[in-house]
Image 1: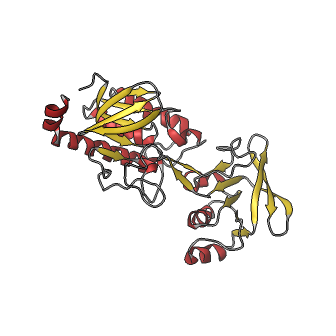
Image 2 (image 1 turned 90 degrees about the horizontal axis):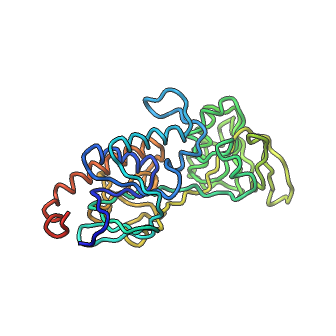
Image 3 (image 1 turned 180 degrees about the vertical axis):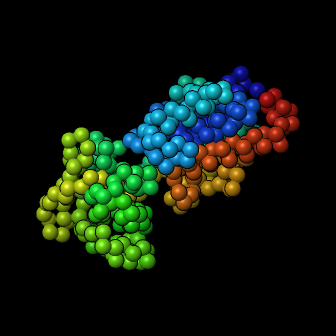
Length: 318
């Protein structure tokens, strides 16, 4: 067998799912490594306030939450590699992880590469992300109690989240580029009958403006060809979610949108390869569900290694 660094479990992605998998795997006695090319914590790092994670009643920033996850994983001996994974492969039951620095071998692999929201790509969007611009009403909606917010999009997610935001905000605008919503009729009817919701039709956001925090939107009406301004305290963008599946799209079974399909143990269609967090086909994408996925994946991987230990020893010397 090649003289390469070897692990029981390799995790690709250092967000809540990957870190949770690392905690459970390392605590269970597996030699574990996490590959993360960017900041540890994933998307949560840019979240200004997290106040819905059970057991943490105080409001913490996403960065603070991710630091706790990181320290917890390191406490049990998890190794962290700040390297970009270029390719993954298999040889027998072993998994081969090729990075921009080295080649690694592992008995099992957890893919926790996450997903990212489709951006509007307008001026001010990046500047005010976490400072008025959000991609998750479930995460940040409670921060806008008695304030004015806008939602961009016309599909199920956009309209459902607009309805959810009426629990907190005093006014919710839905900004949609067409003259009819794409959401299912029942959801549309609930939105249209809600007195807190106003729909701005045939309109796109041209620019997001403010000082330290978001203050107003510059809008363009595509039918009337005119520009207006809208003062809001928050903007929630729902124009699609893109899975980070570039490493595995030709190897692992995906759904129609490109998210990884798993069974209840987070096992993919390839033996010994698991997936966890936002990269998977799921209903709710939150820190707590990502952490749950990671724990399940690590537990399942540990059992799979035990079931195949004779094969690893005989054929791979591991």
